[in-house]
Amino acid sequence: MSDDPRRYAPATLRNRDPILAELRRLLPPRGLVLEVASGTGEHCAHFAAALPALHWQPTDLDPDNRASIAAWCDDLPNVRAPVAMDAAAAWPVTAADAVLCINMIHIAPWAATEGLLRGAALVLPPGAPLILYGPYRQDGVPTAPSNEEFDASLRARDPAWGLRRLEDVAALAAAQGFGAPAVTPMPANNLVVVFRRP
Image (cartoon, rainbow, N blue to C red; front, side, top):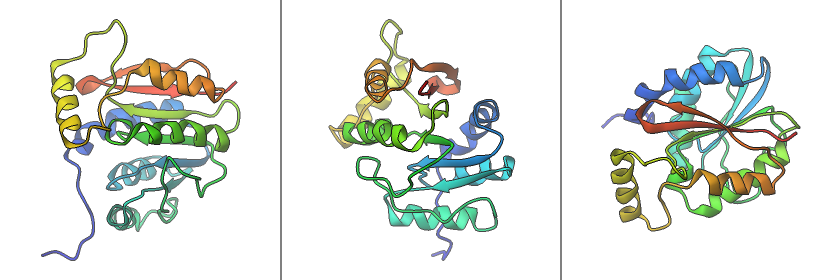
């Protein structure tokens, strides 16, 4: 048994550089990036090392994930200690220059998505980005067979999980004052979806 608390998500090695390329384009040059549901912490460590002018606040509800995040980011001076946060509840962070959420919406109850949009509207100034990454259903766009299989496996694990319609997420965002999403197709049938408030 290892005493190393770091966790590993296999998809991270595949998607971190394509996501980073988008973040270089979307994030402000300086400020605080609040990452919601940071998971293992591998993404935060990779992005913070590549974008040292930004400060990063990772969060996660799971204490084992927070230990993993701390271990991955221990030597990065621009990463704050991870904090416990439930996207669906009151947020412990009150201001940020960007909010980033990777692969949470489909593996959480819908209330977490509602909380994500509500919380982002409270902490972001006008024009600042809320950046989402993951798989979605889109009206008029055939869902890839791999995403259909993924959706079925998620719903088998928890009926409250599953791929969300992008149009439903956009409607929640609009109710919180965000404009229409900017959508960028990504490898493996994922999307980067960016919302901003005017």
